[in-house]
Image (cartoon, rainbow, N blue to C red; front, side):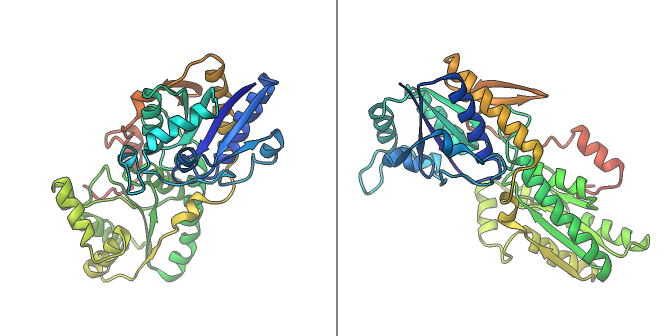
Length: 358
């Protein structure tokens, strides 16, 4: 009997179930004696030994179903080796449960923090295969992560719908887009929805340049302006501060988020009416797009191949149109950020999109 573990970790996304389905179908198709152990709520289930023995029918109908049937949770990497008040050594417990269940391998579907923990377990001697999940698309070493395309479709829909109400009322509208510390989701959603101004963490903004662009549109007879603002966007003044000073400034910010701060500044400097929309977790919800369903199926199939070839300690990666893999050690702890000099930025500037920097 072959036995493998499966867990979904970190923030959810639309394509987790689709990836599990692709992986399971590939495993069952290649091995008649395959048993899949699903750990509940990510690493929490692996730590506590909370799992379910899955059957082929568990994966039926998952291709178009968002979320994760196994549940998920966030287990910060920095706390993985910290023994809490209950005396539980999390790494030791995960290793024990792996051994007690006689697992051949654990498949980890997760983003940055999850893959860091996956690499830790690999270094501890466990057979681990990572699968790249995050709506932020910020995992180093892969061109695309599953979940990004579906979140992009949702964020774009929100921005699209804002156009009609913005035009009707002649307002400045700001839509705050997820993405944590990087701007991939905001950049793509902004371009695809025709946003006039895009603010991302990688290109610190000057609010006077932002308001200058809005005033210029007004002079051109444009009744409204739409801004796509990344949740991690920062001003040029903030970018000059050290990390500790930045954290302290954000901690003491009087606004709920950067979008509201930018909105208040725009209103004060231009006198225009401003509205802020924060779609939040809507961007994680719903069904996966056709693109994500195909990508998820391919990623699941590739993960099975890595298992079959005994190529452990690796993460499935997308390079161009090819599905390949990289060592977990190469991606662990590294962010893939937007290059301010990238061609997509230059192309966006060439059609008049303002990034608030010049």
